[in-house]
Length: 298
Image (tube, rainbow, N blue to C red):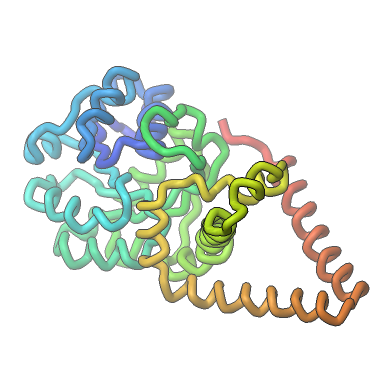
Protein backbone atom coordinates (compact mmCIF):
# COMPACT_ATOMS: atom_id res chain seq x y z
CA UNK A 1 0.00 0.00 0.00
CA UNK A 2 1.34 3.44 -0.93
CA UNK A 3 -0.44 5.73 1.56
CA UNK A 4 2.29 8.36 1.16
CA UNK A 5 1.66 8.68 -2.58
CA UNK A 6 5.39 8.36 -3.28
CA UNK A 7 6.45 7.74 -6.86
CA UNK A 8 9.87 9.36 -7.05
CA UNK A 9 12.43 9.76 -4.30
CA UNK A 10 15.78 11.56 -4.53
CA UNK A 11 18.43 10.68 -1.95
CA UNK A 12 21.57 12.76 -1.43
CA UNK A 13 24.04 10.44 0.27
CA UNK A 14 23.26 6.76 -0.35
CA UNK A 15 24.97 5.28 2.69
CA UNK A 16 23.66 3.37 5.69
CA UNK A 17 20.69 5.65 6.40
CA UNK A 18 19.83 6.72 2.86
CA UNK A 19 20.28 3.20 1.53
CA UNK A 20 18.26 1.61 4.33
CA UNK A 21 15.40 4.05 3.78
CA UNK A 22 15.36 3.18 0.09
CA UNK A 23 15.24 -0.55 0.87
CA UNK A 24 12.58 -0.08 3.55
CA UNK A 25 10.30 1.85 1.20
CA UNK A 26 10.73 -0.69 -1.58
CA UNK A 27 9.08 -3.27 0.71
CA UNK A 28 5.78 -1.38 0.77
CA UNK A 29 5.76 0.80 -2.36
CA UNK A 30 5.66 -0.76 -5.78
CA UNK A 31 7.21 0.98 -8.79
CA UNK A 32 8.99 3.55 -6.61
CA UNK A 33 11.74 5.26 -8.62
CA UNK A 34 14.75 6.16 -6.47
CA UNK A 35 17.48 8.50 -7.63
CA UNK A 36 20.81 8.48 -5.80
CA UNK A 37 23.21 11.42 -5.69
CA UNK A 38 26.59 11.10 -4.02
CA UNK A 39 30.18 12.32 -4.29
CA UNK A 40 31.33 8.70 -4.50
CA UNK A 41 30.37 7.28 -7.90
CA UNK A 42 31.68 3.82 -7.00
CA UNK A 43 29.37 3.73 -3.99
CA UNK A 44 26.42 4.70 -6.18
CA UNK A 45 27.26 1.96 -8.66
CA UNK A 46 27.28 -0.49 -5.76
CA UNK A 47 23.86 0.86 -4.73
CA UNK A 48 22.53 0.19 -8.23
CA UNK A 49 24.06 -3.29 -8.27
CA UNK A 50 22.39 -4.06 -4.92
CA UNK A 51 19.01 -2.78 -6.13
CA UNK A 52 18.98 0.09 -3.64
CA UNK A 53 18.57 2.84 -6.26
CA UNK A 54 17.48 2.98 -9.89
CA UNK A 55 19.45 5.96 -11.17
CA UNK A 56 22.68 7.71 -10.18
CA UNK A 57 23.96 11.30 -10.33
CA UNK A 58 21.71 12.77 -13.05
CA UNK A 59 21.88 16.54 -13.68
CA UNK A 60 20.20 18.43 -10.84
CA UNK A 61 17.31 19.67 -12.95
CA UNK A 62 16.44 16.15 -14.12
CA UNK A 63 16.86 14.70 -10.64
CA UNK A 64 14.42 17.21 -9.13
CA UNK A 65 11.82 16.90 -11.89
CA UNK A 66 8.59 15.34 -10.54
CA UNK A 67 10.32 14.35 -7.29
CA UNK A 68 7.94 13.81 -4.39
CA UNK A 69 10.51 13.91 -1.60
CA UNK A 70 14.19 14.85 -1.54
CA UNK A 71 16.16 13.35 1.35
CA UNK A 72 19.48 14.79 2.48
CA UNK A 73 21.32 11.86 4.04
CA UNK A 74 24.85 13.19 3.61
CA UNK A 75 27.05 14.50 6.46
CA UNK A 76 25.57 17.64 8.03
CA UNK A 77 28.41 19.88 6.80
CA UNK A 78 27.40 19.13 3.21
CA UNK A 79 23.82 20.31 3.76
CA UNK A 80 24.26 23.98 2.68
CA UNK A 81 25.80 23.05 -0.68
CA UNK A 82 23.15 20.40 -1.29
CA UNK A 83 20.37 22.88 -0.53
CA UNK A 84 21.94 25.39 -2.94
CA UNK A 85 21.94 22.75 -5.68
CA UNK A 86 18.29 21.89 -4.99
CA UNK A 87 16.78 25.38 -4.65
CA UNK A 88 16.81 26.50 -8.33
CA UNK A 89 15.03 23.33 -9.45
CA UNK A 90 12.58 22.76 -6.57
CA UNK A 91 8.99 22.34 -7.70
CA UNK A 92 6.02 23.52 -5.61
CA UNK A 93 4.93 19.96 -4.74
CA UNK A 94 8.34 18.60 -3.78
CA UNK A 95 9.20 18.25 -0.10
CA UNK A 96 12.73 18.29 1.31
CA UNK A 97 13.74 16.51 4.48
CA UNK A 98 17.00 15.45 6.12
CA UNK A 99 18.29 12.81 8.53
CA UNK A 100 20.84 14.88 10.44
CA UNK A 101 21.51 14.29 14.12
CA UNK A 102 21.34 18.04 14.81
CA UNK A 103 18.41 20.19 13.81
CA UNK A 104 18.82 23.87 14.76
CA UNK A 105 21.79 24.36 12.45
CA UNK A 106 20.08 22.58 9.55
CA UNK A 107 16.99 24.74 9.95
CA UNK A 108 19.16 27.88 9.83
CA UNK A 109 20.81 26.65 6.62
CA UNK A 110 17.46 25.84 5.01
CA UNK A 111 15.83 29.14 5.99
CA UNK A 112 18.71 31.16 4.55
CA UNK A 113 19.05 29.20 1.31
CA UNK A 114 15.50 28.16 0.41
CA UNK A 115 13.76 31.48 1.01
CA UNK A 116 10.05 31.19 0.21
CA UNK A 117 10.53 27.46 -0.41
CA UNK A 118 11.53 26.96 3.23
CA UNK A 119 7.88 26.03 3.86
CA UNK A 120 8.58 22.78 1.97
CA UNK A 121 11.41 21.73 4.32
CA UNK A 122 10.72 19.19 7.09
CA UNK A 123 13.73 18.59 9.39
CA UNK A 124 14.02 14.98 10.54
CA UNK A 125 16.21 12.61 12.51
CA UNK A 126 15.80 8.81 12.47
CA UNK A 127 16.95 7.29 15.77
CA UNK A 128 18.57 4.28 14.18
CA UNK A 129 21.97 3.39 12.90
CA UNK A 130 24.98 1.13 13.26
CA UNK A 131 28.70 1.48 13.79
CA UNK A 132 29.29 0.53 10.15
CA UNK A 133 28.63 3.03 7.37
CA UNK A 134 28.16 2.84 3.63
CA UNK A 135 25.51 1.38 1.36
CA UNK A 136 26.78 -2.17 1.84
CA UNK A 137 25.66 -1.90 5.49
CA UNK A 138 22.13 -0.79 4.50
CA UNK A 139 19.22 -3.05 5.40
CA UNK A 140 15.46 -2.87 4.90
CA UNK A 141 14.55 -3.41 8.56
CA UNK A 142 16.82 -0.73 10.05
CA UNK A 143 13.89 1.55 10.99
CA UNK A 144 11.36 -1.09 12.05
CA UNK A 145 9.91 0.01 15.38
CA UNK A 146 12.47 2.83 15.68
CA UNK A 147 11.72 6.47 16.47
CA UNK A 148 11.93 9.22 13.89
CA UNK A 149 11.85 12.77 15.24
CA UNK A 150 10.50 15.54 13.02
CA UNK A 151 11.11 19.17 13.99
CA UNK A 152 8.92 21.25 11.66
CA UNK A 153 9.04 25.01 12.13
CA UNK A 154 6.14 27.46 12.28
CA UNK A 155 6.60 28.01 8.54
CA UNK A 156 6.50 24.34 7.56
CA UNK A 157 3.25 23.52 5.78
CA UNK A 158 1.10 20.76 7.32
CA UNK A 159 1.03 19.05 3.94
CA UNK A 160 4.82 18.82 3.86
CA UNK A 161 5.00 17.42 7.39
CA UNK A 162 2.29 14.89 6.63
CA UNK A 163 4.06 13.65 3.51
CA UNK A 164 7.36 13.08 5.35
CA UNK A 165 5.59 11.52 8.33
CA UNK A 166 3.78 9.02 6.09
CA UNK A 167 7.03 8.15 4.34
CA UNK A 168 8.70 7.23 7.61
CA UNK A 169 5.70 5.23 8.78
CA UNK A 170 5.87 3.20 5.59
CA UNK A 171 9.55 2.59 6.36
CA UNK A 172 8.44 1.01 9.67
CA UNK A 173 9.27 3.88 12.04
CA UNK A 174 7.31 5.65 14.79
CA UNK A 175 7.06 9.40 14.25
CA UNK A 176 7.37 12.04 16.99
CA UNK A 177 7.44 15.82 16.66
CA UNK A 178 9.27 18.32 18.89
CA UNK A 179 11.08 21.64 18.61
CA UNK A 180 14.58 21.71 17.15
CA UNK A 181 16.11 23.17 20.31
CA UNK A 182 14.56 20.50 22.52
CA UNK A 183 15.74 17.81 20.11
CA UNK A 184 19.34 19.07 20.18
CA UNK A 185 19.43 19.18 23.98
CA UNK A 186 18.08 15.64 24.31
CA UNK A 187 20.43 14.08 21.79
CA UNK A 188 23.49 15.91 23.08
CA UNK A 189 22.91 13.96 26.30
CA UNK A 190 21.83 10.52 25.09
CA UNK A 191 23.59 10.18 21.74
CA UNK A 192 26.28 12.74 21.02
CA UNK A 193 28.01 12.64 24.42
CA UNK A 194 28.20 8.79 24.51
CA UNK A 195 29.82 8.80 21.07
CA UNK A 196 32.38 11.39 22.18
CA UNK A 197 33.17 9.39 25.30
CA UNK A 198 33.71 6.22 23.27
CA UNK A 199 35.96 8.03 20.80
CA UNK A 200 37.92 9.61 23.67
CA UNK A 201 38.48 6.31 25.51
CA UNK A 202 39.66 4.42 22.43
CA UNK A 203 41.89 7.33 21.39
CA UNK A 204 43.39 7.46 24.89
CA UNK A 205 44.18 3.74 25.00
CA UNK A 206 45.46 3.70 21.42
CA UNK A 207 47.87 6.55 22.24
CA UNK A 208 49.54 4.75 25.14
CA UNK A 209 52.94 2.99 24.75
CA UNK A 210 51.37 -0.34 25.76
CA UNK A 211 48.32 0.04 23.50
CA UNK A 212 48.86 -3.34 21.83
CA UNK A 213 48.85 -5.11 25.19
CA UNK A 214 45.77 -3.21 26.38
CA UNK A 215 43.75 -4.12 23.30
CA UNK A 216 44.93 -7.73 23.51
CA UNK A 217 43.25 -8.12 26.90
CA UNK A 218 40.14 -6.02 26.16
CA UNK A 219 36.97 -8.11 26.26
CA UNK A 220 33.18 -7.78 26.34
CA UNK A 221 32.88 -4.68 28.49
CA UNK A 222 35.31 -2.71 26.38
CA UNK A 223 33.73 -4.04 23.18
CA UNK A 224 30.23 -2.94 24.23
CA UNK A 225 31.32 0.49 25.47
CA UNK A 226 33.61 1.24 22.52
CA UNK A 227 31.40 -0.15 19.71
CA UNK A 228 30.18 3.28 18.61
CA UNK A 229 33.76 4.54 18.27
CA UNK A 230 33.73 2.59 15.01
CA UNK A 231 31.24 5.12 13.57
CA UNK A 232 32.00 7.57 10.76
CA UNK A 233 34.61 10.12 11.95
CA UNK A 234 33.47 12.69 9.38
CA UNK A 235 29.85 12.44 10.45
CA UNK A 236 30.64 12.74 14.16
CA UNK A 237 33.01 15.64 13.62
CA UNK A 238 30.16 17.51 11.92
CA UNK A 239 27.64 16.56 14.60
CA UNK A 240 29.97 17.64 17.41
CA UNK A 241 30.60 21.06 15.90
CA UNK A 242 26.96 21.57 14.91
CA UNK A 243 25.70 20.85 18.44
CA UNK A 244 28.68 22.47 20.15
CA UNK A 245 26.90 24.49 22.83
CA UNK A 246 24.67 21.66 24.05
CA UNK A 247 27.61 19.25 24.01
CA UNK A 248 29.83 21.58 26.03
CA UNK A 249 27.11 21.71 28.71
CA UNK A 250 26.83 17.91 28.72
CA UNK A 251 30.61 17.47 28.94
CA UNK A 252 30.67 19.84 31.94
CA UNK A 253 27.91 17.84 33.62
CA UNK A 254 29.71 14.55 32.95
CA UNK A 255 33.01 15.93 34.25
CA UNK A 256 31.20 16.87 37.48
CA UNK A 257 29.95 13.29 37.73
CA UNK A 258 33.47 11.96 37.13
CA UNK A 259 34.80 14.30 39.81
CA UNK A 260 32.21 12.94 42.23
CA UNK A 261 33.31 9.41 41.37
CA UNK A 262 36.96 10.33 41.86
CA UNK A 263 36.20 11.90 45.24
CA UNK A 264 34.36 8.76 46.37
CA UNK A 265 37.30 6.59 45.34
CA UNK A 266 39.86 8.87 46.95
CA UNK A 267 37.86 8.85 50.20
CA UNK A 268 37.35 5.05 50.04
CA UNK A 269 33.63 5.77 50.39
CA UNK A 270 32.24 2.26 49.82
CA UNK A 271 28.65 3.24 50.60
CA UNK A 272 28.79 6.28 48.32
CA UNK A 273 30.15 4.17 45.47
CA UNK A 274 27.48 1.53 46.01
CA UNK A 275 24.71 4.14 46.07
CA UNK A 276 25.95 5.70 42.85
CA UNK A 277 26.27 2.35 41.10
CA UNK A 278 22.93 1.11 42.44
CA UNK A 279 21.09 4.17 41.15
CA UNK A 280 22.69 3.82 37.70
CA UNK A 281 22.05 0.06 37.60
CA UNK A 282 18.37 0.40 38.50
CA UNK A 283 17.76 3.13 35.94
CA UNK A 284 19.61 1.23 33.19
CA UNK A 285 17.74 -2.01 33.88
CA UNK A 286 14.37 -0.24 33.97
CA UNK A 287 15.13 1.40 30.62
CA UNK A 288 16.25 -1.92 29.18
CA UNK A 289 13.01 -3.57 30.30
CA UNK A 290 10.98 -0.86 28.56
CA UNK A 291 12.89 -1.48 25.34
CA UNK A 292 12.41 -5.23 25.61
CA UNK A 293 8.66 -4.97 26.19
CA UNK A 294 7.96 -2.18 23.68
CA UNK A 295 5.80 -3.49 20.83
CA UNK A 296 7.32 -3.33 17.38
CA UNK A 297 5.53 -1.40 14.68
CA UNK A 298 4.67 -3.34 11.56
